[in-house]
Amino acid sequence: MDSDPAVKEILISMNEKESFIIEDLDDYHLVIKADEEYRVRRELEIELEKNTYSLET
Image (cartoon, rainbow, N blue to C red; front, side, top):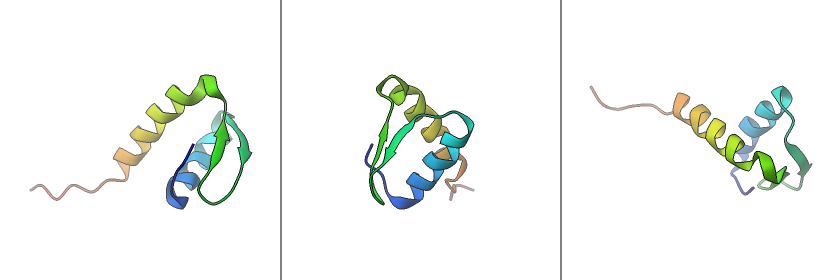
């Protein structure tokens, strides 16, 4: 999975609850369990939405 360092930190935090990371390659890449990809992407999207600011009034 390719990501920026901030997203990687979220993924590492998520991994503490339910292990899916196989290997931490570098600042931008992780190897995750193939059968967990959909779940991880869905949960990551939810986490990113929590951290998105809305400029709407």
